[in-house]
Amino acid sequence: MLKLKNIRVSYKLAIILLVGIIGFVSLLFIAATALKNNLVAEREARLNAVINTTLSQIAYLEKSQPKQQAQEAAKALINSVRFDSDNYLFVIDESRQVVVHPLRPDLVGQQMGNDRSGEDSFWYTMVDLARGGQHGVLTYPWKTASGKEADKLSAVHGFAPWGWIIGSGMLLDDIERAVEKQFWNMAVATLIAIIVMAVFGIVISRAIVNPLEQIKDSMKKGPKGI
Image (cartoon, rainbow, N blue to C red; front, side):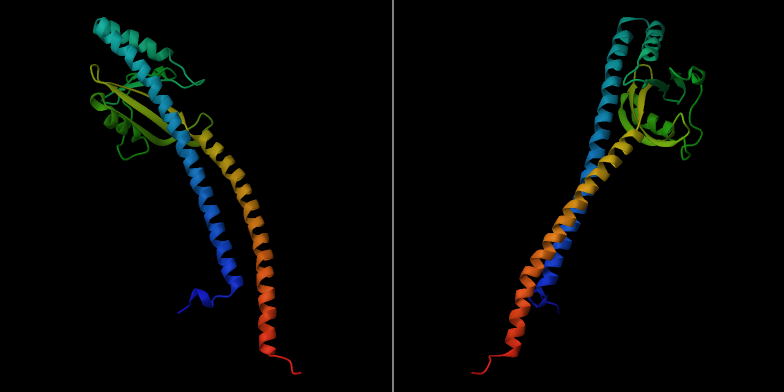
């Protein structure tokens, strides 16, 4: 059985260096993951804040006006909402029919989602999350305006009195780019730290091992005669 005391000093120093390198690399991945989670959480909070503000105005309309008039006013309100440049709100009902879509008015009245297990299954998930006035968030694949694939984060809130589901989403491709850029910045810093550790490890190893080897050789030769 291999015992620590039987391992050469140079190997012990190499093990310490290896453990340090593994620690640095682990921290690198942990930091990148934490950064991504924080950015996504900020985006989720932003979506929920915009939807909640809109919902409070819709609730006021629902209580202060007749239903049809209140709904028309609510649709106009939702169509006008823009935030963070080009982000918008949309509304579907609990049967997945589009009620409001500012950018695609041609979709109004159409039922979205053809297959609960297909690529557009997220429409079913939205209804499941927000049915009866509930709310939730989901992430799903989306094609950008340029045709590229990107993950999209959406928040959905149900408005029970009308059976509406109000939602909004943001693409996450910019977060991926930001995290990737920061990851490589941290990777360079980690590599520099590893090189410094390796250099110091070699210097310390030689400073300790070489004298020990000299002492060992002297002991093997034995005392010189007089």
